[in-house]
Amino acid sequence: MTRTPRHRRRPEARPEEILTAALATFAEQGFAAARVEDIARRAGLSKGAVYLYFPSKEAMLNALVEQSAGALARTVEQHVAQIAAADPEAALRGLLRILFAAVSSPEVSAAPRLVLTEAHRFPELANFYREHVLDVMRRAMGALLAAAVEAGVFRDVDTDAFMRIIAGPGLAQMALTTIFDLKPDRLTDPGDLADAIADILLYGLKPRLESANT
Image (cartoon, rainbow, N blue to C red; front, side, top):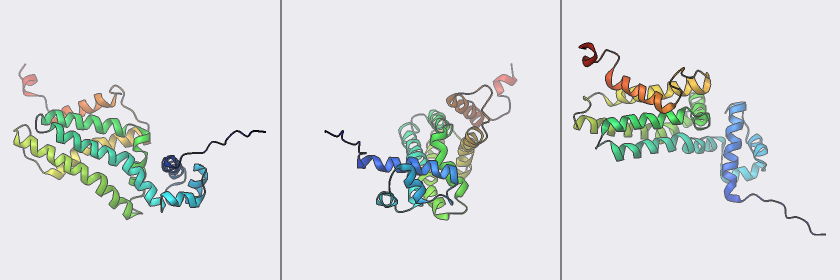
């Protein structure tokens, strides 16, 4: 009797399977309570097999951050490098669209939300996130601001204040949308919401002069 060969997962697929299992386990149990054996069981692997790819839970969460927030930060940096010198305002609007599309997705924002929740208890996670995400974003926003000031498009403001005013709406969108399920009434498309916020950032809340004089 001929036996049908059993399906075997390719070794190169296992890291992704482990990370998927890790994210689900962290979300259910919290990072501190999650055990490697729980992750291994969910991934259909032995605990030893998991350790072949990731030496610790921290390494798994760091890899998840690299896949999501780290990739986002690098995309923003590349976007600014390509556009800011030619059109700083378009670079700012594009940056916000990229940011809002990412943070509005529960799948993309899951790892960053975990880090924000656990960072105060695990300083090494906070340090990794800062180095691989926040420092990259700050560098990109600093380059955007410098290009805009040089072009005479923006006035010269403090870089850290600029970073906070740009990143703040993204963090608020992530929390309101993926944690509290509080979605906008009208601007349901993340790109439209990003454009509306860009208008407020660029022009403020006071009536524009041309509107006031009509």
